[in-house]
Image 1 (cartoon, chains in turn yellow, orange):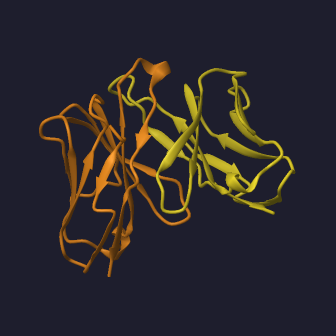
Image 2 (cartoon, chains in turn cyan, blue; image 1 turned 90 degrees about the horizontal axis):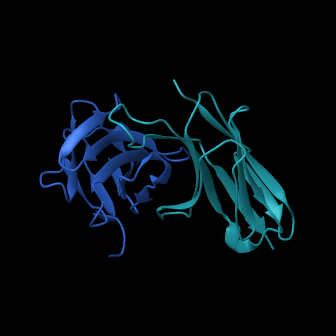
Length: 115
Length: 116
């Protein structure tokens, strides 16, 4: 059974600081996603990482994937209050029916950026 | 098109009652997924449709749960004889059905179910 672990589960950081969220998973996967979720809101797709060594950046967030280590990281640079949310990584195991996705999510990292 | 739409946003019911949720995916998306999210956890896969065909069901989906997508457009998820353990956020997602490298899921805002 695929297991996806994130750490830390909760992160309180000051504005302007840098930090990294880690996502470890237990089996080979084709794709890894990062999502953001605000309280009571939907999941917003941040990044899709498709291959070993993939790195993607958007604003203050940068995600990377090491398929050999089965590890993805989400790095936050110079955090701002607007980044406060819960961040999930999700590992994609293709369904038997072909290329459809079946995501296994981590438990999430609740990020709180304080002023 | 404003994305994946789910109704109702909130549902409070008494134990033993039946409830039905609706999901309207993005119009051109042929794949539709249902996930369940409990407090403090990540979403868990429940079931998946390719057009009107239900092709995969998780073992989390007990006999009390049934999902349909009759015309390959909107989908309904029904829970019969609800139990307190069914209380959760039920999320719907859709995708275009691109080749594997381009598959991207778009999630709705969810239906929050509370079973008293």
